[in-house]
Amino acid sequence: MRDRWLPVGVLAGVLFAVNVVARLVTRFGFDGDTEMSDRISLGMFAVIGVILAVVAFVWGRPHPAARWGGDVAVAILVAMALTIFVGPFISGSHPFAEGAGSFFAQIWLYGGFAAGGTLVGYLVLIATGLDYRSQSLKRYAETRQAKPRRVVRR
Picture 1 (cartoon, one colour):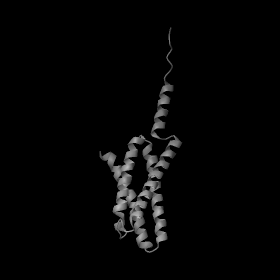
Picture 2 (picture 1 turned 120 degrees about the vertical axis):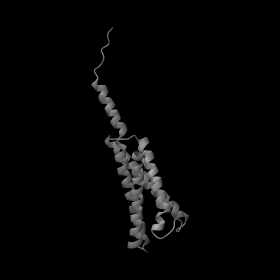
Picture 3 (picture 1 turned 90 degrees about the vertical axis):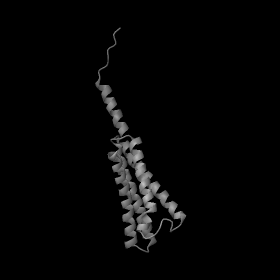
Picture 4 (picture 1 turned 180 degrees about the vertical axis):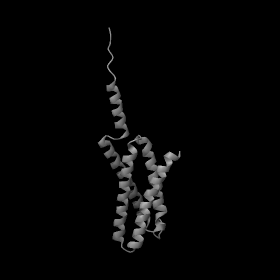
């Protein structure tokens, strides 16, 4: 059980840590500059997408998509909840300080970049032929070709 959920928790922690770093840089480096704050937020979402693309590429090799997809989805949901509900307190605010529109925009941005990053990583994995299914089909083809044909006697 620990072998399965520890990487999920670590991934959620890393995704939340990216958010914490972005919020702290915004708070202490660019306190009143909203344009720079938006750029840092967009950069944070891009980093989250890249992290998830790498995770999809690495986790997609030894496991089928049904197994690692659920793990990544749980990590994304936990990290998103922490980012949306705990993250604003780090930057000296609260979750609904800028209104419901900003709150839901953050959810859509996080979900979009997370899904996009995961999809890009998995598509690159499939395109290179290194995913679990392609490798298992390759092993099957090799074993079928290794056996000699049976001679049918009449």
